[in-house]
Length: 136
Image 1 (cartoon, rainbow, N blue to C red):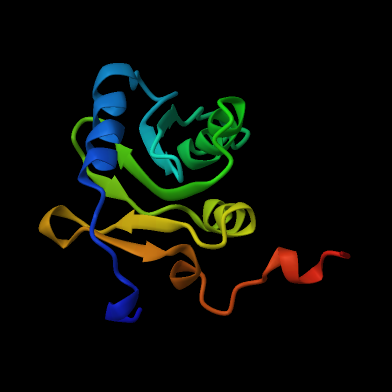
Image 2 (image 1 turned 180 degrees about the vertical axis):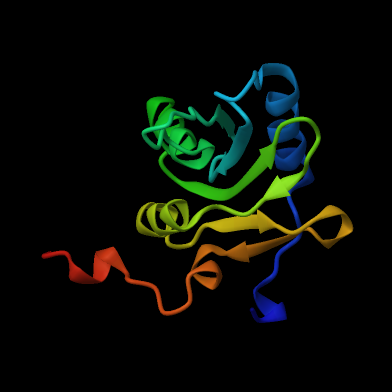
């Protein structure tokens, strides 16, 4: 990852995700919260829906929740674990989906004072770019 690609961490976004995790995460079904900032400044939040069949991660629920609120241009996303366990990186499936929907998206990753916002593409070196294969 190139240092030049880093942007300041959106602390308000991290705080929003932590608040959702603190207030609404319950038991094993909801253990991760996500928050995303839309280009117009709005913050959208969501929780994962764990299920043994592979229920959706918080980041995927966030994409749907954002669309349901007319927020189609997410610029930054963060996910946090419940019980004050901190920021977590997205899984591989979420990285690919976020790249496909929002190729310019920044993802907040790291721990504590080492939090940083990086382009989603940095999390998928050599990525398959879905849009490159679509017919115009």
